[in-house]
Length: 380
Ligand SMILES: *[C@@H]1O[C@H](CO)[C@@H](O)[C@H](O)[C@H]1NC(C)=O
Image (cartoon, rainbow, N blue to C red; front, side, top):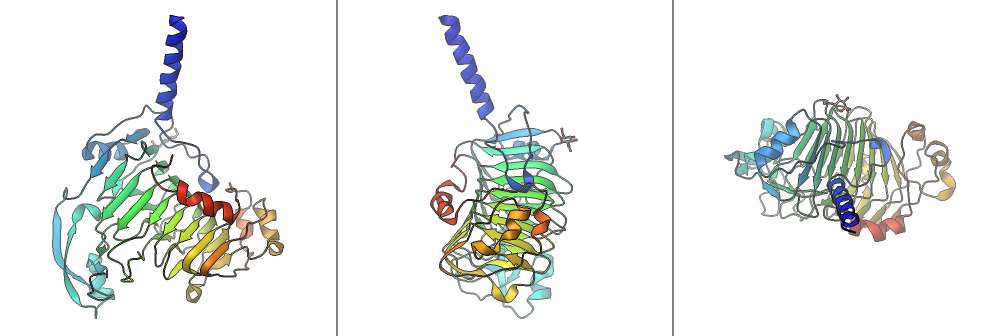
């Protein structure tokens, strides 16, 4: 009897040990990503430990059980910036980073700026890492994450990143990818970010899955001066493959996302809610498939004046033969409520999905009921 009890206890403990790690697997282009794999979990307790675990060359499963606050750790910088959208208190101001104000906003009023240096550049994340929050306790304040310079096989799951100089354009990006492969960003909440919530830079990001995240655009400092964040998601790069599924995009006013640089984007079962301005910017070279998404009180689903890439919005069930041929399923219709819809009929690029790992698609109405409750950190 006693030995049976002990055996049960041992197996329960083993299960608990396994539970400290990534939940589920990536769907879509980053399918197969393993991050730190079966490495013994580590539990950083200080900012320095967190930075070290993310930046060393060992495969790691890094579990966050607390808040890591980087504000003030690199000092405060004061200087002269600019106010391209006006000096009103609801307007974001800009840091003169790389002479941006001087070169691009010469006629904007000059204003004093004072910002936290730690927010400007994120923590370097090397290859073969899983960064996972426990419950809703994994929070990083005042500094983002940078997966760059050839890093591959990285999972970021169930954490919150917040408060990166939200008053200032160029105040910091929450998650940056540039020159990467196989990255999965899942169940992450980002809020109060100065610049982009998620940015895929000019270098190839290759295979990326961005799923179940909460992009919270509510802010007191906006480039559109209306409480809605403008810089949200920027997907560029060289032939990047991006699966964007199950994300909740709240209270944004633009670039949600801006897509450029030959990016092939599968945007499926996402929920845009309460957005001013536009969601999609369709730049030259972009190839975008929208299916099963919901746009509710979301302004313009697509910024019509910007469309210079290719976009298929699965406008009716009779016209998506290309989906069945190249994605292996009939594309789902998108749903628009109090939103300017967009009819994108270009199927000429759907062939590029052929042979790739493709995320499944459910109906827009099922996304509408599930996404607001399942997206973001603290939900798995
Ligand atoms: C990451 O893990 C893979 C598979 O184990 C290995 O081949 C590769 O060298 C690792 N990368 C780094 C940078 O350690």
